Image (tube, rainbow, N blue to C red):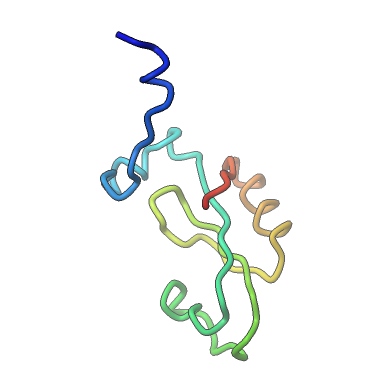
Amino acid sequence: MNMNNNMNRTTDIHQISPEALAVLGGGKLAYVRTIRSEDVQKHFPQAPELEPGSLLYALHAADGTPIMLTDSREAAVANAWSNELETLSVH
């Protein structure tokens, strides 16, 4: 077995089930992504109507479950840390 080949493998995240993502990292991983105010209702149906054209930050669990919405990345990361979640960079 060639170790270099194993280290260079990538996994298509579309092949990972939501259940597997939910337990990824022992349920302690989260990610922050930007979201336009026009798209907030899709992810946060309970949120009030927002003025179009704003850029916001959403904190999501590893399986994509929305956790919180804020107007700063720093607040989203701070919320993750206060809930003992490790934030990852997602591209």
